[in-house]
Length: 321
Image (cartoon, rainbow, N blue to C red; front, side, top):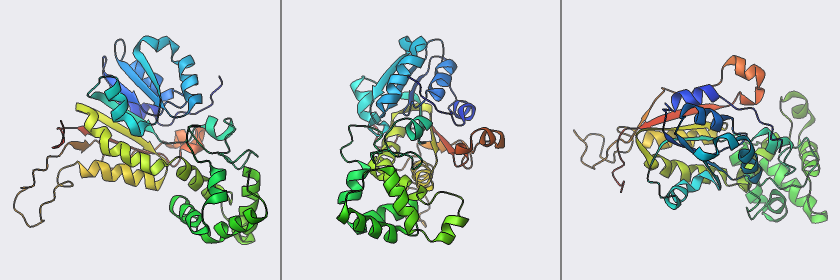
């Protein structure tokens, strides 16, 4: 299988994961396996990788490209949000590193034929995992006007969300929206000509992004992951997340801060010392997010919005079993 994808901040991710030979690591988003291969090289000769992806194409690709590491790799077709269950089924209590890259792969965007891009006329699917129940087309043709507007505004920050939602509802009364081409044309027709001429992105960009996020419940699953993944690290282990959206980065930032000193304490601010029993369990490794170099952005413009955050496990959570 040809799976086209440009790995983002590969060196930075491996460096900040603090990988050592013999480590047990998780790559929760295999994608094109660029990060996975780098991790396996860093933890050689005996280190092991648990590779997870919800996209069956990514799993099929991983079986091919990671074949040289087959004795040290376990592949799982699932979503990283369910990491606690995945590790429990393997009889694993904790790992040394957890990595996820939340970006859409080039393969998904341009080659998967699932309607992620407005540049190709395909069925409105947008499911990263074909087992997901609701497609983008079903959302567009059944959700209320208010619910669609909320999705476009919340996940796409689309200022014309209500106008676009209204146009969609009016259109589907005549005939259902079935393809990406139809949707992109409808959105372009709603946009004022001035905006179409002046804005740098295609008029449909924000709506397509919002639909993809909603279909795959991306924010909900990221919150689930960040709630539990830190608990699955050994002391000294690290969690590393590359995000591409401000909402994603906010979730990651807040989850790390909630486990850092003072952020999880529920005592009143004027208490002289903590009495609630809070123990900090994570420590941020960098002051702020790490971003791609100018050189990388030049080679891969899609990386320009990437932000990498990393934290180290310094103690067990107070509710840790």
